[in-house]
Length: 132
Image (cartoon, rainbow, N blue to C red):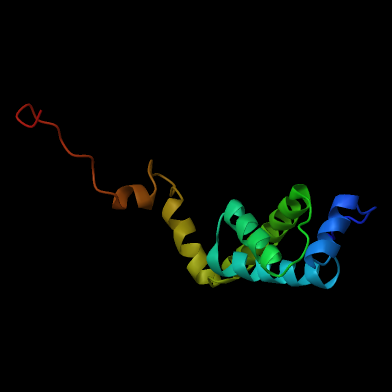
């Protein structure tokens, strides 16, 4: 997961020299990835919001913007890592006894037709001609 390296176009070189921008590589890439990861972890913002915030941050820091696809892939990969981390944390949160409680509610015991959860739910309201 690193920015693409290739020949620099004359347009990009003109922007760098004329406006004092730096290339998006190395330290800038790591700094942006860390910032995006923290933002995705703490806020849960949608990808388009992260994309807009990242481009704004890069422009303010006078760093040349990477290609749209590069930034999209970076954001998608970071959001996947955040989701995997959240899943791992949530999966270890309940104790084995706590995890067994919901499972026992949905099991249908021998000789019964419905689960304990179904028995705990209130019955549907009765329809009467007056109420219709």
